[in-house]
Image 1: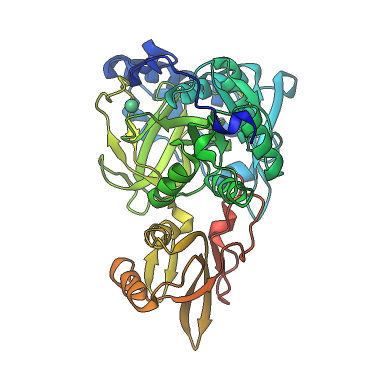
Image 2: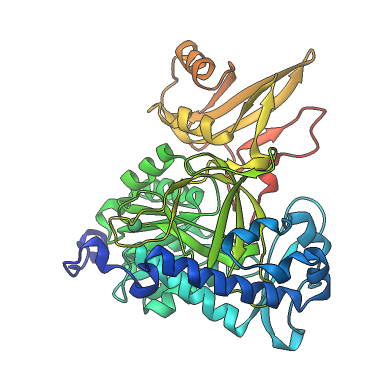
Length: 450
Ligand SMILES: [Zn+2]
């Protein structure tokens, strides 16, 4: 066995949690000063967006009269459809000669959404990502393996800029070639891994099949985001990879991954509020919800130049956990880990539920492995939900169905597979297949590659 497999992690500086703050002054600003800075930046953002005539028409007159942060509530929401309609660069606020690049998110229908970057935007991305990596306890002594792609989608470059800003050693592996990933990870002594949670699961399976014990490698941090992962899956990944995990948020529309992350206190996801103004809205009721109540995350970027977002409806469901100073010293508000997306909600025979609820229930059963899928079909006019999952030993079905009935409100059918028998997609996990005649697509697959 090569040395790297068994050597312990290099000794770390004896730092408390609060040692890992990249921009201490800004990250710990008293909230009144933070609000003042947000207001200045909001006014700049509206001015910037107004440079594009189409964007200015979207606001009409409201944007010219923003005197307090609350005035943002008078502005109209910006939707995914607005951005799709503006394909390719119809909402960009600067000429193409000032742009360096774009990233995009694709859905299953229509045009992709393009997010262009000026030089200032690329720098901004590096700054917020460096904050995220520092919050995940990384320093210049760490080796970060970056498994999201370096291409049209935003993940890889975001981690890369953050890591370079912080001075980490980067393994820019991108996705796929899992055996090579493991070889590089072990032989170059990766201490941190960035990616989607389902890729973490893939690495675990491949390592175990190869007889490698990741818990004995120097790997100590996993930074995962961009898809739903339950607390139950989180615990399994932490246990089997031997890492502390961090949940990172951000999307193409807001300028890429890096809008926020949880800190070692793991008491909610910090949002970098000097860069992003967040609101939580109940869009059915047309109002903002109080702290603690779940709603859709609405984001206004405050420092993005080429295509700022003003009240962008992200579709992500979350709540404000706290606006108090965190144990780590940061003063930014903290969000609950995302529950899923508004359009992930499934309805079967009148019962509303989210795939994340199913995952949490399934993975609380030790016999059930990490691969599962929900298949929705119709039989004699009734919806049928079949849970297909890999199991180490076949669980007792009756109590399991009863737990579904008690906790989620329906009794699924089950189809069990042996470990390794179900298909593994290269990218994000496909958790829902809706074969009902009334459904046009699978909502969980539609969120692909944001
Ligand atoms: Zn904190």
